[in-house]
Length: 124
Image (cartoon, rainbow, N blue to C red):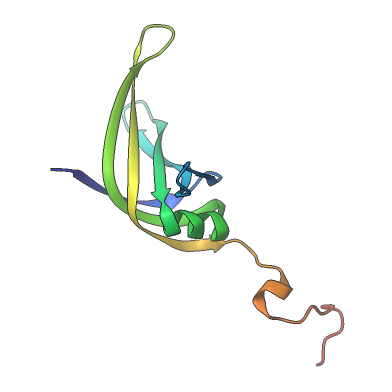
């Protein structure tokens, strides 16, 4: 049985690459902040998100650093040893569904089908 997870929040810069077979893969991270009320401090854990195929191309085309997304998918944990000998655990969310809530990449006027016009030349 797979662990399923859902996150929503701002993303880091999306980075897209392709596999040898041509499958698009976009990776970014999302912060998960934890507040300690006793010490009145917070710590941030970065969750890695991986998106495949057409969804990966969509995110790479329309999302930017700081965009707010909602992601659901399978949770993967991986443990590894750092150079100093301490153990590190990474959390990865492999997206099955992803929606951009806000912060779409701005398209050029020609890409939107809108004529390029000077904003000082208002018709009113």
